Length: 103
Image (cartoon, rainbow, N blue to C red):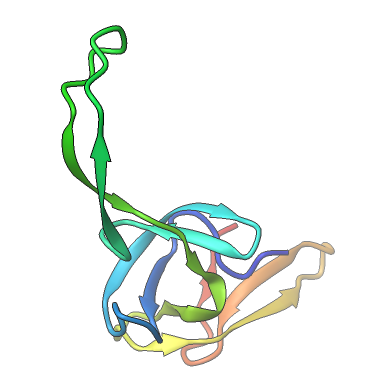
């Protein structure tokens, strides 16, 4: 069970974007893509067939999952635990507040 999933509110705990908050857009293995975090300039060639004008765009690049943490309601970084409910389902919860996360 992945502890960080798409749609989670996270905070960056290390790297050039340390302290920034965002929402996870994509998870792929040990990497996540977070909106407006780890932005790079991407140069695009014009392609009239695909209707691409070309130019320079900002693109969010992947960041390692160890460099992000879930943010609790207070905006602080927190760890994630897993509890097994009575019906056998696993649920994620925040260690700081104990709040259960949707799956």
